[in-house]
Amino acid sequence: MIPTLIRPINGGIQKLYMFDNGYGASVVQHRYSYGNESGLWELAVTRYEPSSEVLDFELCYDTPITEDFIGGLTHEGVQDILTKIESL
Image (cartoon, rainbow, N blue to C red):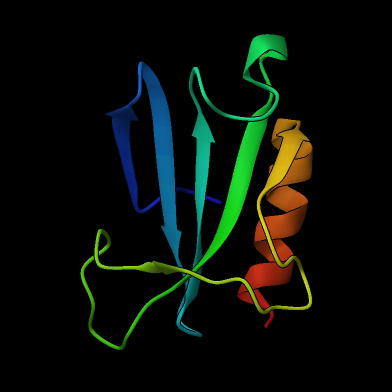
């Protein structure tokens, strides 16, 4: 999946994803993220209002996917979770 926006954050990178179902994800790799020291990614599920801008999101802690952040993810692991978020 292709991120909606990529931007620098905390000395690293953030990839934001938006899906038509109102959910999305913030995927980060920076000095404070879980797994960064091993080149891995951290993901948080996000929620958008209809017609929101990509940066106008809230973290979502009540999905069947997770109630928190998921750290230590490979690229393939991120893609797998993004597919699940898109299917919510």
